Structures are given as C-alpha cells and as structure tokens.
Length: 387
Image (tube, rainbow, N blue to C red):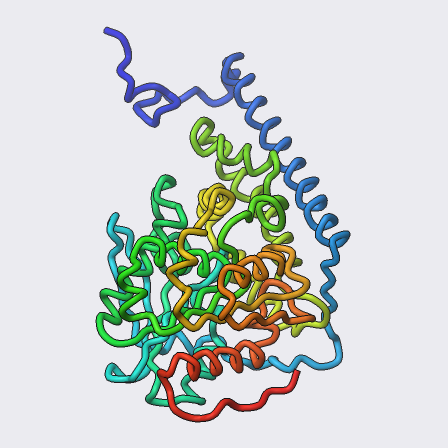
C-alpha cells in the first residue's frame, strides 16, 4: 500500500527519523541548499530594495533631522487611548475590529477617527486629547483599528480592499454611534475608507454626516506616484508569491519585506526636525503591523479609485489637509480633491510630510475645531493657533 498524502515528509505527516550521522539524501540536500540560496537572495534583494527606496525618497526631498538638544515630547504618555472604553465590532465577513470610545453617549456629535496604512488608532493621540479638552461633553469620540492593524483581526487577502474598509467603517458607526450627527476624520488609507463609505452608503452621509476631514489622502491615482510607486518592487512581489507557493520562504520573506517597507514609511512620515519620541512612536506602529497585512493592502491601494464618492460630499463641510513634503500621497492629490469639492477648506502644511497629526498636531487640532464649528455641531469660538 502506498504512503498516504498526510504521511508525505513535506506535509507534516508521520516521518521516519533519519539515524544520527546518516548522510542526507541527495534530493533533500539539494532542496535544502535551494531554500538557503533563495532565502539569501531574498534577504540581499530586500536590503538593496530598502536602500534604493530610501535613497529615492532622499532624492525626492525627504529630510528628517532629529534634534539632539531638546525633545518636547519626552515623557509623553501615548497610552491615553488605551484607557478609553474598549469594545469590539464584528465586520460583515466576521473579522473582529477593536474599538475605543470616550465622551458622553448623549453628546451633540460623534467624531469617528479612521487611521492610516501601517498605523493604529493611537496615531490620533493628540486629536483625541485636544477635542476632549477643548469641547468637553459636546463631543463623543469613536476610534478603531483597521482590519489587519493594531488589535483588530487578520482578514483574508481577498477582503483587503478599500471598499471593504468603507463597509467596516459603517459597521462601526452602526454599532457604536447609531444615532445623531457624525464627523468623520480619515488619515491616508483611513481617508480612502471614508470615501469608500460615501460611495456605498450615500443615504448615511446625506442624513447623518455633518462634516468630513480628509488628511493626507487621495480619491484615486495613488499608483502613479508616492506610496504605490515606491513600494512597487520585486522583493514585495516575491513575498506575495512565497505566501502562496513557497511556505518555507515566508518567514524569511516576512523579515525581508519588513526591511523594505519600514525604512520607506519611516523616512516619509516626517520632514525636518522631529521629536525622537514621536519618531519612535511612529516607527513602533509601523513595526507592529504584520507584513502580511502590508502586502495584502498594497495592491488595493494601488487600484483604489473612489472618485464616485466626491459628489456625495458636495453639500457637506469638508476639510482637506496635506503636507507639502508628503511623498507617500503628494499634496497634488489634496488639490485634486479640492477641485472636485470647491467649498472645502484646503490646507497645505508647508513643513509637513505624511503624518501631520503627529508632527504638527496643533495645526491639525485647530483645523478640526474649525470643521466642527462650520458643521454646526458645537458651540463656541475657534482658538487662534500660530503657524
């Protein structure tokens, strides 16, 4: 009787141990050498790709100078959001989304934050603190981790799409903010999720959404420049293939792909002098994002086109904000949004890159205050913030 499939030595079945000192069969030795060579090749390619990506960013104008004299955020407690009310929402495909809530249930408005690619809800640390301090019981906040990010569950590859993120956002709204006016704040991939929700749930936006903030994001054409161009390289393509065809290489590929992606995202997050504490905080979010999540979403970001959502926002107060030095989603994408939404407030931050909500939190906070006032969901006067 032949050996069953489950007993195949490459499928984890019953194996006969090789006696100590016995020679390795030639086919096994060749296979082992092939895997070793491929691992080495992937690692070398990853190093070269990472260096090339960072150098490309440097040539394009990326410049991060870490000050050595004084760190204004030394001692900053970034665990603020961890103390908020924790919850879970199950998406339509069963993926569990981790949520946090703060503020009274009967507040006049709920602000929902949607974070970006390779970030977590903690990337809105400063905005969550500011809105509570500035508006008190007038504002309730809901934050959540995108699928595959932070504390949320890992999705299947085919469910890593921008349109699915839009559906996830609406599920969070239905579960955590089922009534009352909403202001949606989306950064980067989170902004794309907001647009995807608008395209699929027009009635929700017409009836309940009082304001939208689109930070460092785009409706389309991400693949032609920025992140899509920088991260389109053979190393990541090789990792995608390894996931499906060569499981023995996945662990090596995981670290190699991480070494490609992390330096690119870190260098592109900030511009000019940056607090070392902020730099470490952003790097930690990137490093904790599973590389499988990164690779799965890259193609979705490249193919993303939610231009059809823009007419839905035409009659809603909108804030569009981006950094002049953003090489992930260049500011021209913000201008393109503003051309389609002429009533929106367009803000270009002259010293910012892709993470203005961290590096220039006071400017983002002030812009959100203006949005809340324009939306008519809070009462008070805007505070004057210097540039």
